[in-house]
Length: 71
Image (cartoon, rainbow, N blue to C red):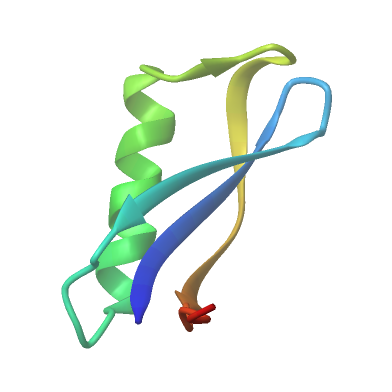
């Protein structure tokens, strides 16, 4: 099972921009995520096709299961 932490931001055009981090440290700390997202916004190091990231939208952990089918 693969896990990813997805940090969701809004850009200047109010469109969602997602930054994905594979294999996050568990348990996921909402306080640490909030602080990291604040740092990303204040450092202004990521831009998107719709401009700079301007606000936090949310965060989520996504799990993916892959089952091979033998033929």
